[in-house]
Image (cartoon, one colour):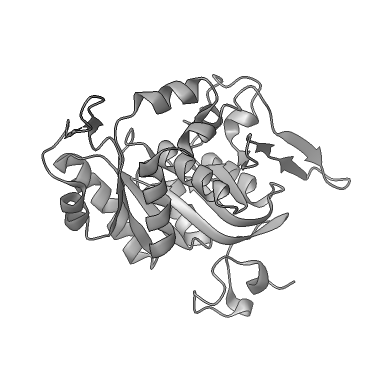
Length: 280
């Protein structure tokens, strides 16, 4: 099979196979590679990644998640698989290995550095080149199988990892995560501009922690800003995918390892994935 046949950007990149430098997986193929990004930390990239992965899987798609935040991985905790470990399998007679990802309760395939260390609290104290090298190996050497979607939960900012992924991985779309403050919007805009400069499609923005819903009357109470998600999306110059509330029930279900079952019954999350599929 040629490079183009197994590439998520087949027919979209304008590059011929002979000159293609796209980084492709050794053990599988992806129809879509979606990077979930933000210029700001703490806005909920991992939450957005987990919700999208869960809803896409619920709709019948085959889904994988690569935890791209090497120094602050969150996805094992989100899916309640943090006590499990990915297998490291020798390949051939040399030093090459491949990783067998951990599957969640609904069959989402996940690889994260926290699934490769002995204990999840163990820090990695590495410089940028080592971090990007490890992430690249996790992307290429994991036995993903054939996936409809690979979602990459990215670290914040526009530094080494973001640059490596957008330059080397055939990303088909970017979902931006933000929270409703002008300061955050300004910082997140840097990621949008970066993606545009690198000719990557920005699908839209998810405004996380947009409001709190009153349990008695269902009124939406905006905590951080009076501006709507639509106004923030307009400031970013990209479509609005969804406004997500602060949801303590989701936090509780994550802590109990039951996030997937809970996500699949929440209407706001249905609206998010419907809009995502419409625009991607």
